[in-house]
Length: 304
Image 1: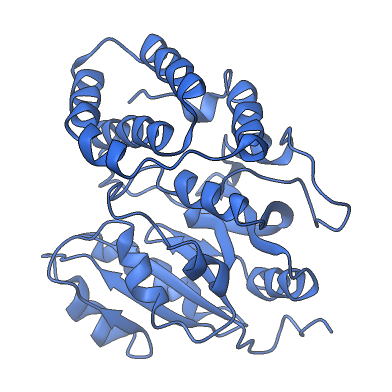
Image 2: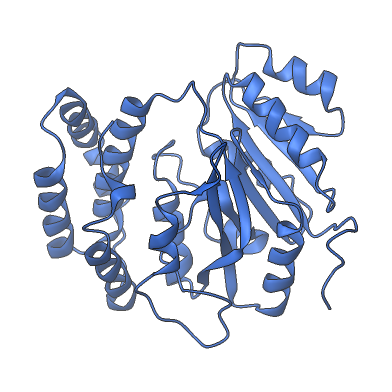
């Protein structure tokens, strides 16, 4: 039975990670605090030194605040999910927030489909309200799935705009500590797929994103390229991994950031090869299909 979107809904916990973005986080918490679902919110403050924790305690005492001693990156979400008591967990970043009613709608969809691990929302960029460039890629996913899926089947997800089944997240091990941050969703999504879960895009869920002015786009590009290379060698069979690596290296800018990313990837290769666990043919087929579809994606260029 659908839950009234205007009433409190205890099925979803919202998890936010942050690091030295006090003002953006406070805005996001204000938006979450106003949601009709009244979700529990858990914030992992990844060792901020700008007064973030003190401001959260002062302005949002209802928020559950976790303060690891160092910056855990995406693994800060794992720390928070250990405390989650609801069947579903919604992630958002400190510069994004959920539209009223979307969390209840996501919970309804997941309640009705026990084989579905996650639903990813449409993202609009604030203050313009324009769709994020990645949305058409999600909406026009080349993957096929069972008729019961609520929208296009996905091979990955965006942590800032996804509601996941808590048991599925935990069962797949959460975000890998080796990747830290930057495209960390791809590895977790692949492990969910090979456990038999489905992922889907749902156009009537909505997340607002007001990109932080503190974002370091070059650093994000370095981490994204490094992690894509690591993911490739952690999960892709040898020949696809070789082809994917060659395509990545041929397509990135010839600049210092790309050199640093490749150097970091090479430095981590020993642990990557020790943990290497390639997927089987079915999941590799999904990854290959996505790779072909993303060749012209404007949302996945390692530039900046």
